[in-house]
Amino acid sequence: MTIANTMYAELEREAAATRRLLERIPPDKLSWRPHPKSRTLGQLAMHVATLPGAISSLAHLDTFPFESGGKDVDPADVGAILAAHDAGLVKAKANLESMDDGKIMGTWVGTAGGTPVITVPRAGFLRTIMLNHGYHHRGQLTVYLRELDVPLPFIYGPTADENPFQAALNASKR
Image 1 (spheres, helix red, strand yellow):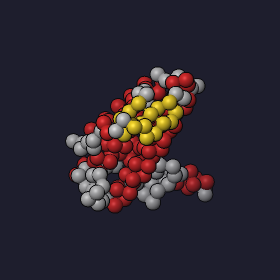
Image 2 (cartoon, helix red, strand yellow):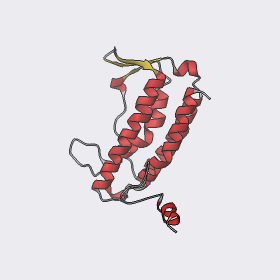
Image 3 (cartoon, helix red, strand yellow):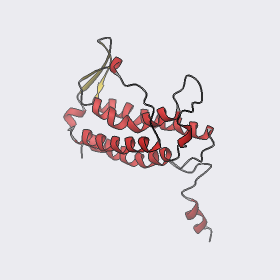
Image 4 (cartoon, rainbow, N blue to C red):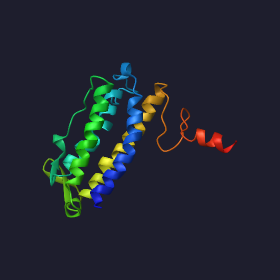
């Protein structure tokens, strides 16, 4: 198993929790934002949905100029967010499967104004931005949904709204 395969395996495990969260987005609240400087709910959800595919594609480059980075996307509806999530996973899998350990341990450079500002092994870039950065924004999304009084699904364990272990706990008390 390659390094990239282990990253994809983690991403795939996490994808179910991410999808459960994205499915809870209220269709009539896509333009809601908790603060004027914050992304809208729709923009944040689309960012979470598209990160794996976009970042795994950038990892194939040797150098990326940060100033050419993407802009926030306003999704038409929740279906567009879910479709982007599913497509992003397919793209991430293909991108990761095409990298052997030599490629993934090769150097990736991010520049600003032509000057290198980050130089890391691709594995570090993928771990930090595709995975950890994605989890960070998924956490933000839970806060947005909580502020909108949307019941939160379990991610790593029970929430105040959902306990996937409750049936087993009830059965053990019998």
